[in-house]
Image 1 (cartoon, rainbow, N blue to C red):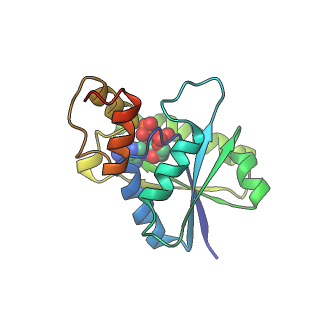
Image 2: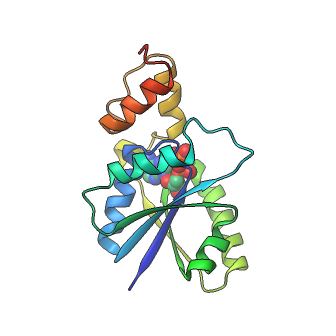
Length: 161
Ligand code: ADP
């Protein structure tokens, strides 16, 4: 069975993430979306909230599971005996950081393979942070996230949108 782990902060999940999840679920037998967290970062959503939004957004894809991990991704992979990482690639700006991460992870865990899935052009500009920024200034985010996520962001930001 081919299992791929799709790691990220997912603060919160966007339609760009969902596109990568859907497409990788067709390639792999199981896709585990791993919410990675770091106590020193200040996310908008708690890990539990991010997990709940991901579970809701992926409820129609049977071979997707949502999990979380604090710390190094390679520790999560070796603990669970997984060898494949899936990552989405957006613009050129993603490339350098992803290339560095894939190379370091490969050094840390030999049998590891990182698979990149190219973003669809309509999601090329999309990131969780831009969605939060647009929402923060009262912009319409309905083309970027699911309805549930939009409502969750709006209530986080005070419901005055
Ligand atoms: P961000 O906050 O930038 O959205 P995440 O850490 O949540 O970042 O992203 C997790 C993974 O999803 C990364 O591999 C990232 O490159 C990828 N990703 C994020 N947004 C998109 C998108 N719009 N299209 C394709 N891949 C994406």
